[in-house]
Length: 194
Image (tube, rainbow, N blue to C red; front, side):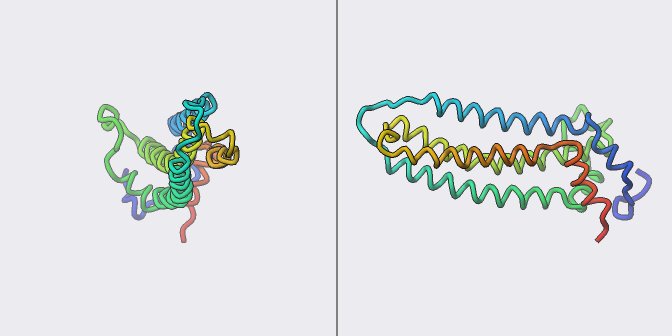
C-alpha cells in the first residue's frame, strides 16, 4: 500500500474489490452455521418428551426463562453496538493496516480485501452470536418445562422460547451478509467522510 491508510481515499472500486462473492461467502457460511445450530436446538426441543408424570421444576423454568429474556435483550443491544464499533472507519482501517488475523498460512499473501473480509466476518459472527445466546437459553427453559411435564398445565411457557427464537430467525434473515449489505457497511464507513 503506497499511501498511509490515515490519508487514503477509498473509491467505489475498492468497495467492489472488498465485497466480491469470494470475499462474502465465508461470512455467509458462518452466518448459516448459526442458523443451523438454532434449527437443531429447536428440533431437539420439539422432540423433547416428559420425563415424569409429576409436575416439577417450575422454579427452574422461570429462572432460566427470565435469564434467557435478559440475555436476549442484552445480546440484542450488545450485538448492534459491537457491530457498529467493529464496522467503523477506524476499525476497518486498522484491519487493513494491521497484519492479517487469519490462518498463518494465508498471512503472507493476504490482500487488503482479505483483511477486510476477515474483519467483516468476525463482526457478523460477534453480532449473530450475541443475538443467538438469549433465544437458545430461552428455548432451554422450554425443554426443562417439557421434561418436567409442565406444558400440560402451563402451555404459555412455550412462548418463552418460541418468541425469542422466531425473532432470532427474523434478525438472521434481515442481517444476512449479502454482497449488497456488506458493501453498504463499507460505503458508510469508508466513503462517507463526516
